[in-house]
Image 1 (tube, rainbow, N blue to C red):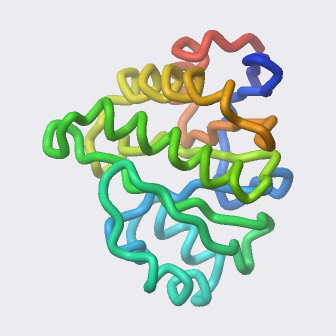
Image 2: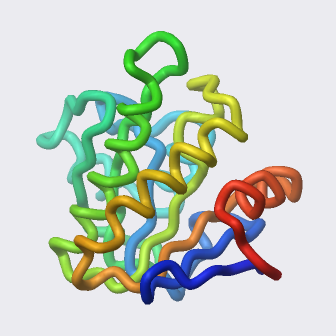
Length: 177
């Protein structure tokens, strides 16, 4: 695990499963516009949370790229799931701003619910095609800009699938092991 202190907030990158972050009060779902189950992160979160998550999401949909909404986490070991729709790379424009909005809006929603910790996947990098290195750079810049405005969130974790993804985030975030 590598980490960095960013104005009093612990920022870290780990390899793992986002549905197994029991020490995080909120986790972020790489959602689709309808907030329905799907493949990748969204499918894993919906399966782990149980059918109540789908029911809780229905009245909140649809959401637009960059938007974030929150639901209870149901059978997950967390209090909340923040659902964020990242941009489809080079389709939803401007992709970098929409991705930054996603991270900042997710942090704001978690902070509004007094979450002290939040775990993110690498939003938009799977089926939505965002290159991992570019996405990590956008994520770090967006988080660094938002940190001074946070009152509750004190721990931000990136949970990544592959060791190479962790390395990309370590470099982009200036993390130390």
